[in-house]
Length: 169
Image (cartoon, rainbow, N blue to C red; front, side, top):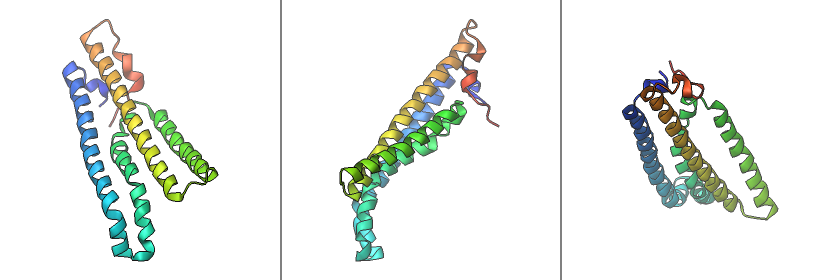
């Protein structure tokens, strides 16, 4: 199937609604996990692995925000393939890698601590993930509006968004 299997305004609204519900559900689960990591990682790491590993719990705490971004962004990112925006996903990964390298270089150059760098890394990736999810929602809206309009108005070509959709087996 492709996006044209959602040809009506009602079914396009259903697709949008499902995407929003999925994102909100993932945000709740991710936030709950991040809060648990924030509060429990330091004492549990010390308890399970011993005092030599206490610092690892603090590093896990620094990575908690990234957990939220990954929890939201990763499952819904396959939407890019449905919408025919594979190159956008590649661009996202290039941005993640290059911004991570730049952040760590900047932290090193300004003599920041490793925990500061990890917290910055985590926050950066959370921000990128949230921006990415917003872009996906925008693309879904645009594709659904185009698909519904092509059925509702005969003057608009059926192929108005076929370049941006991909047939799924």
